[in-house]
Image (cartoon, rainbow, N blue to C red):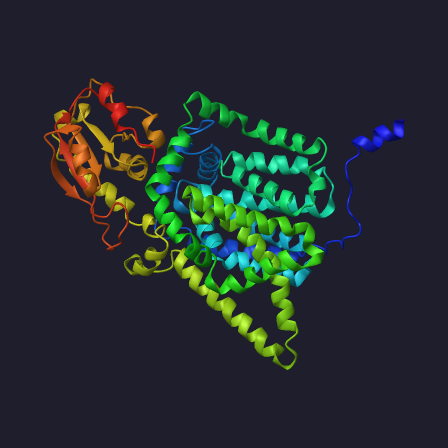
Length: 514
């Protein structure tokens, strides 16, 4: 009787009929991670803050359990990085560099789960390190930076669970999901896709018992503060997600397949195709077949809701890690052509690293960003912010000195507001107001400050701004000086007599979720 009870509660142990994993190639994988970290550190101070980073700086000064558009982890890490290393692009981006290095290590561990030895682990880590996605998210702080990392961590833990059958890994899985959920709710999509993949391809026995519920409870406890914040604030993230899907959904669907091919690199397509084929056909990896299905499920869901293509890319990196062994085996089987195949792989690797570095990192002079900016607009969003603030300051100087105490500085989006909050005080500007995402909640002008109002708006938004304010005239035009076609290039600075109605009445009409 006692033995029956013990058997019922004892966790499932490893399936020893499966081959064990090799030793972790810590020195080789660590070397790749350190090399990536050195490159990212060397270029982290070029250009300037990204518009999202300026928002995270502001959010970090208003730490909370949640924000209109995100959970709290990224602003918290941004605050920690700047407190430790200084409020500069290089200081802020230390945490992004560390996250990118961690991504490389986790990819090496994923390759190890698939049975790869040292050369395979190092190759997988190297492919990840030079991929466009990892270079891009490792260069600057964004929610995607930590989202990619946590998706890979969750998937690695899931692979441990599936390979060993040891259901105690559910606890670690819940922990990873909970941390990921404090960065971005998108981790729920990954959990759903992985569960669906296991239901389709197995091994389903890991879903039995109470351990999955225990893992879910751990995740829920970790994300509960943010869920509570969202619930008590009317679930603003749903409004943000709905707005983004409505605005960009059609374009996201059109570009989904091309971006799946481009965002890692076209040169890596053979590697992840080999990985997909291996996961679906290799009997020794039948236990991991659910990963291939999870990727397909994620792609279908993202296209259906009009989400961004990069949402599915962490799983594609996992599949790429599975493809490194067959690719290296192909080189080794070359016989007399082995050396030629090896040289080809090395040449492609160099071309891959060079092309992705130019596209994802701030290597080119800003005036030559036309081609990289056409592929990845995030490059251009790091250029011209201090020039932008100087243009606004010139407009503010046109307000008579006796009127400035009751004048208001208003920005139409969080990037502009973040730049004015960061650089404006040094130029004598007051703290900016904005109705965009969480700037809306960080304060509105008092009804005792009736104007004048200095407004920054893109040209296509001038009419909307003028409908809320009176007697507006243009007093400035933004030019970043490099011809970079970013969001603020040729934005207009308007000087208006005041709001068309009291701020307390107008403010809710200025709220923007996306």
